[in-house]
Length: 592
Image (cartoon, one colour):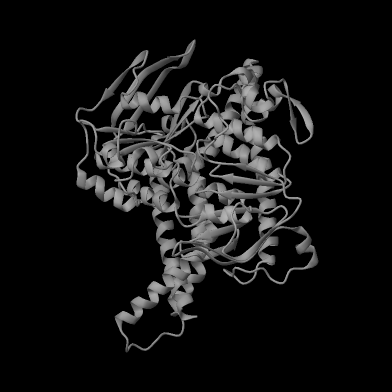
């Protein structure tokens, strides 16, 4: 464990009529990579502001090593009073160097001369990131850093943080982001905080063990009623079993959909059977859409069948929203046609959350002020329905203005999922949601009888949810892949790398005799490395589960250190094996 550079002892904060938390002890080491996990409303954002010194605690003592620079990247930075994004990024007594801001903004693809008042959420977020990173922090506090970012920007900030020499604490709903980057976890739960020297990859195993221990203690202390309230809210073991069943069902659906698609990467269905045609809800044929001189969608052919879960991915500006509007009939193609089933009845949940008027009460949003809500033809009491979406039933009369961003998103989902529909359109549905609500959203989508169209940059969410991915690269071409985000990445990588590898070989020696096959050693490595990668992944998972024991460090410090070193060594070996396998796969593709 690295030496602490920032800490709070006996931290307590009053919120409303009671304590939000009390008696918390928290520290950040000089090289820590911390995931801060907790439900919406638990106080994660407030805790980051306390660590940053932006909020004064009612109890406790904040200590910081002199000279340590602590920078907070807020979830919703205020740009009021700034004319352009540049004015915001370079304002204040602690303003960063202009050339550093410019360099980061250029890599993130943001025009700092854009007017602040008309900037999109993604542009505001990029400007805030450029400002924060250019300030050369020693401790970086990140509140939902990937919100409103496209895949390119998310991958860029992951690479930057991977090289970062200081410490960071991150709140994020992006499981892939947390799994790749974090090495320690802070879990804010029911007013208490726990720390484990494991990254987010081992979080679920650790929390399940904590709940099991609490259940045993509750039985011994005859305090089970107190614990059951939490189990009703989370239901860890039961939910995980259901999710395993849904995951198996998702793989079956992907296999069925793959059989309906043509050759890998082709943008056509095979000749449709009568059964396929009767199940078609959206039929796009040779669709092209231009804006000015630029072709956004080119010669796109695809059938959306009843029950499909379609994910749409790509960088900002690649054409995701255009494709979504074409598929739902909101706009017409310049060439080709899009036919929608006459019985299609859609519900659109957009990323603007426009229905959430701050003055309305929760019951106004759900039941027009009444006590009952009709959910897919069945009447339910509003308090019981709130519980299904992880709300305290007593919140029925709470004003929308008092809800967190994640709670507002969850309320909108509760409202829209109650309406009868056979097409669900989700535009960035994961923004502002906590991990438990994401689990709930995945369950609701899996159980939904209709068709789902999802635009999202959340890679893990797509991998757990969709049956087909439509990937846009900005050239007008749309990749059609049976599976999720990672399936799309795997399909694209060999094509891109093969071109680069072929060009490099041509430049190296035009006269060299071309190889016709892999060498014996290369072929042997290509065959054996997938099993080696699986073995290393299993070793990492096993060691992280062992490390999740909260008493391990006290009982066996030596064993704790050995596990930490073993996990790091396995990660390094796994990365090397993956890079070697990718290199060999590219060579094999290039050789035909």
